[in-house]
Length: 67
Image 1 (cartoon, rainbow, N blue to C red):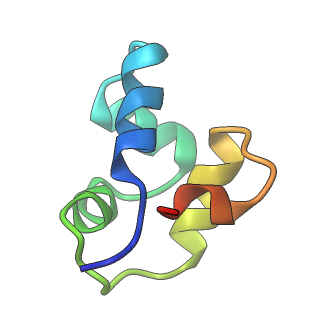
Image 2 (image 1 turned 135 degrees about the vertical axis):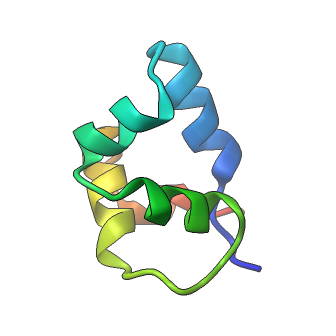
């Protein structure tokens, strides 16, 4: 299990009326990586989180982690 705040990602997708595919395309990540992150798997490159944080316009990638 990872400590990624998946709710924050889901809220962003919902707020911006995006499909999962559109979100991944805009983040420049593979849909499979999205599912790994959302399902709590740890076998993905950390770079994917930086891409997501950048697209979500977060100041720091650490904002994607749970408190």
